[in-house]
Image 1 (cartoon, rainbow, N blue to C red):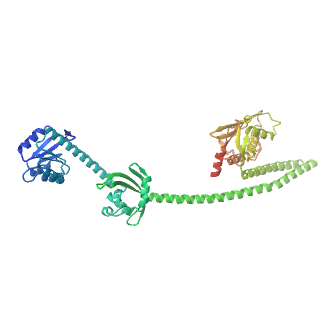
Image 2 (tube, rainbow, N blue to C red; image 1 turned 90 degrees about the horizontal axis):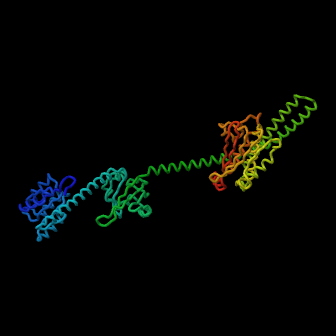
Image 3 (cartoon, one colour; image 1 turned 180 degrees about the vertical axis):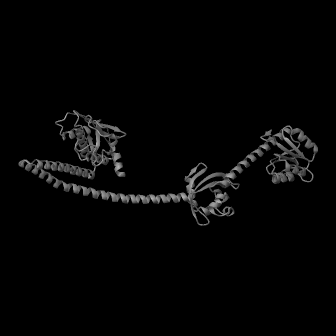
Length: 510
């Protein structure tokens, strides 16, 4: 049998030359055999030559086999030791087991086949021990060089081994740590046992929160992962525990939480101040607009009187001035009326009900003057487009959109308006399209702005508030709106109304 580095190396020791010659002749083809006639000769040979298996006869002058194998154990502890003895030397075998730590014994006269098998078995033990030792050395290297503390502890909390990182964490030398119990550094053992039970995965206990108290009095927040390693020689459960100091992380989390709490508090405070200011501003705007309406109506009435006076006196200049004042006053009154509607829309609560889009379109068109227009309108069939909205607000939205569509199709021989409805991802999309003058597509984000006008007032009348009211109403429903179009390509206004449950959630968030 060969090893990865050559044949098995066997040293046989016997004071009888015949036995030495017989052993070498019988096994030299199978093993790398060396022989010695005395313990002293064998020990000298082992200083420069490493044997895998050492075999010794018991009865030798001077140093007997048991004494020799005990010396081999001290000098070459990794060698596998076998005693060769007669049936009458059982007491010597017991002594060799106790002092020499022998692997086995073979009685004389030996059987060559049995002898060969015993040597090969002994080498297998040698190879397994060597592999175990290599693994242990690699583990020890990792154990000693690990950046996080690692401790070996039994079920009673006794510390059996610690790595240098543990010394650094606790600030005391290894000897003092091993003389202590883990409970002296991690108080609250009852809570720790419960935490280990709740974090168990097979033989591993993952990410257990513990607090380490150092001898210097520092309290460290840590995470521990413990792995069951078997049992000690006295039957106690053995664990390897890896400890990670997360004190800095915890302090940073605490600092961030305090910052977030402070930010939330300040945002809530500023939001309340802003809402109060907006409410005051809304009340002020409503009051101003309401108070402006009466004097403006009086001014318009006076312009009517001036116009009658100019006609009586046949004063062309007076008639022109009064007409300009009348037109400007009328636009101001329209603006004030729109502002009042906008303020009322902002203050009013949404009361939902099921509204038929077709019926709402018919009602909206009935309130508009279309007597002198050629008009083609398409809309959903009755009962095919039902939206859950505030009916009064929805009518305001459609009235604004339909009146805009009629206004901007004024230059078209036939005004074509299409009202459509579809459901996308649970939301209702209502769209109003026309074949009017449209608008510059690059300005689509300005369509819903307050007082934003994309056409000159000389071309198309208006205050620039209608679509702002539309947007405000749709947003109060938890939805949104957007516009599509191009110059001389018509315009389409899309309204998205979410389901009532979704909008309720949005209002709760708001």
